[in-house]
Length: 168
Image (cartoon, rainbow, N blue to C red; front, top):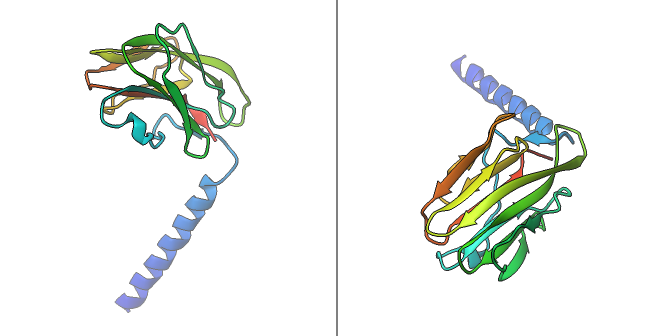
């Protein structure tokens, strides 16, 4: 009798899990504020010899850099063209802009901005609640409405990443 109960429990667990998997594949945008989703960094960003700023490119995010205090050595599109990494050879500051949706099932039409700095201390800062950022040592930046925030790292050749909070 115990065997039947445990087999039944396994079958129920599998059915429930498959139901959750189907629910996740819906066309609604995911709220990425509670999970850490970032790109696989290109090998050129490894080793601490260059600074890398990686930004969401997929789902019409249309990343753009502005107010640059340096020159980008090159950029690499990767992970099925969902991300772009900007390789920078020395100290730099500027702004990365992404076109982000304001919520689930909304078009990407809000120009969100996050400032970055590369140097002995590298950092991300924003007052935009629709962006998420992370440093190479895992410090995460996400702000509440009407707030601002900054995260920083002293990792040599830091890698910084930015993406929209809502992403399909």
